[in-house]
Length: 117
Image (cartoon, rainbow, N blue to C red):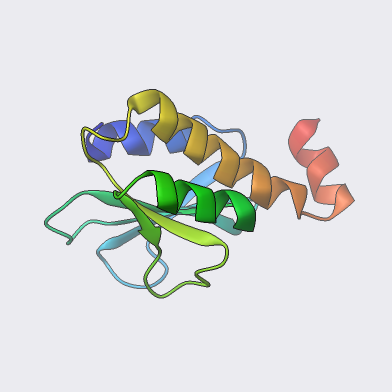
């Protein structure tokens, strides 16, 4: 996946918006104001930071060398995924969905109801 495909996939998730809250090179995706994905556009290697269940985060880091603790984030909950041949499109989409779902699960009930209609 390239950066535009990542962007399109993230934005396809219900209630998702994109912004640059930190600087002009860190693209952030939020669901109802809560971050679930970040892409540093200035990194020479394309990568995406995604929220993850702590146990699954450790398992993924052990299984894939392209998945590491995310820089500048709580490493217990955030992974950095290098977009490389070792990470299939299917796995990447699953990880984006998992990150989105982790954030939605923590939203207040009223916001979840608003999102789910």
